Image (cartoon, rainbow, N blue to C red; front, top):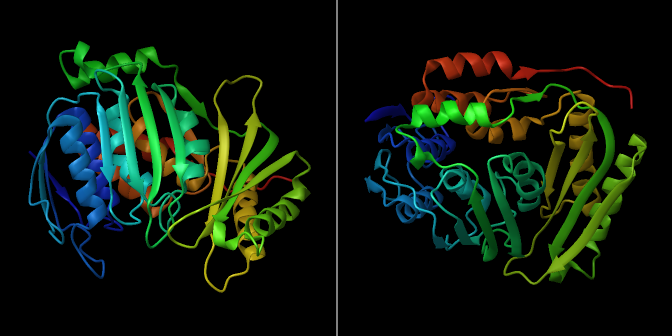
Length: 364
């Protein structure tokens, strides 16, 4: 059983989520201690318990100490079996963070997995639904056929947003004697990833959304127009659609993504940014902030934004890859350390060398 230090680096819940994902995939049980040690309320929170419960359904895992507030967790996985799973987080807990634990093993299950999930789709400290769907998912379709559908948005604090994700694997671990053999074959089957420069900016897309009670104030339109005004300096087509939905909590947000084209590559090069609305913060500020973040990523010259680098690591660690990102965040470094428990120190060394921080400024 692997022993994992939950207090490493920023000591957040990502250590738990990444450990759960890799343990389920590699069949290596683990014990993690000092979970979220330096946080105001240490230990497991509801969102982490929901990750464990979901994986119990997916692979008949055997957890111990999976209690609210527990600072340690024992986890023993079993065979991953594709199936239909229904998960109700019960709060505005982040759906996209929970998917970080479930999606990796689902990509390599024995058959199709369908997950219906209720919770927060656009909530603080997590990727927005549209970022997850339009920036991350396109990178993962090399592993499986993935269809992600938003049925209803859920904002903080009541959540009640609903999504459905369907994952139909192209590869699975069960035709091989062990995980090491599977990983070697995967590297041979999937073309090496080489994401080291952006290519040509061809368009910017986005979604500006809000709860129905903010429609009269034109919140979604104001967010979109402010972002569009900031982005107009880039001299490329800009398409930002607006939408309103009936939700249990008042909320809004905007997600933007820039698409690039490289003549010598079929890699999807997509940079993203998002920003949630806040009380007493004007909609125009929300839109312009998201736009400024995206412009900064574009000007870095890197083909992978700082948040995407962190989210890609668990998947790209399984294949030959080199990616350049705009910033190597503490969150990314913590993720590298966690993955190394399961894939070995050679992963840690290789990835620190190959994920390169670039600060090049482009003339726009």
